[in-house]
Image (cartoon, rainbow, N blue to C red):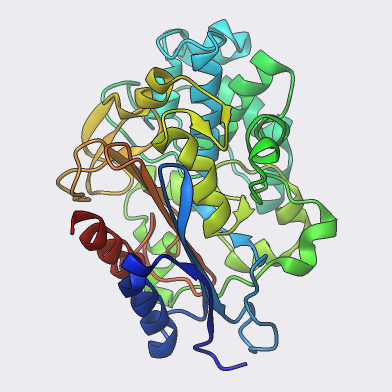
Length: 379
């Protein structure tokens, strides 16, 4: 199979999307990748191609999946939004209402909305964390519950790169009695038929593409210039090759450890884009979906060092990430994966790949396809 072999489905009006996808593979910008778009809850583009490993021995197949790093966070956001829509979670309530131990360290007033918007002051652990500690849920959450905030909660966002998933996930667990991976699978991914996992069963390992680490200049640890950034991004240090291990894949690391492909990411978020109903099943109310758009905080993020506006979980499109429609949210993962949800167009655009770029929360490779989508929809 040639490197630039691309398979999948594209509605006629979106032919330029396929051209852009093929160009990424032909240029070497991508090794293996998938791109999917939905409109009104239906798939209009579903592409995949290239190779699942650096040695080019395994083609990227229709059901190939890959670790998408922080795009995983969006699965925790939709889980929390679903619980709020059911009246089981109040974003304005203190976290300690659901998780009493969290009140320690002066955090009794920290709200669930602060967890969602990276403004809880818990972007990292004060105590030393080994990479193996990320596989120990109780250690991760008990240390976060016990520690004092790293800055005054609610005053600024500071990207909770790894901790956010544990924080939201523990709130979900306290409310439902289920781990975030179980809740997400039973309530969202399973009913949708979406091939996305927070905690991948060993039976699926053969389908996982190998992540290729970014160039040294793109190493996430290089972003750490001050103590707060070092605490957040280097404790523990990020080791991309760890994503190839059974321990990483099987663990529930809800801010960074999810495994899926563009089709599954786009399908999950078509719930939000389509007003809460997909495939004849209603998952949420439209009002509950649109809560993702409620701005919580904006300004220069203390960790990312760039302007960001956060809604309930997702980044809000605007100056930093422009979009043709105002009611648009997004987030992406270290190395390049990305999801954009356009409430006005009732559309989602998702990209997942294995050759990592230097971006912390997505990169520019996906915008050739997304730009072509926007042009075609505007025509």
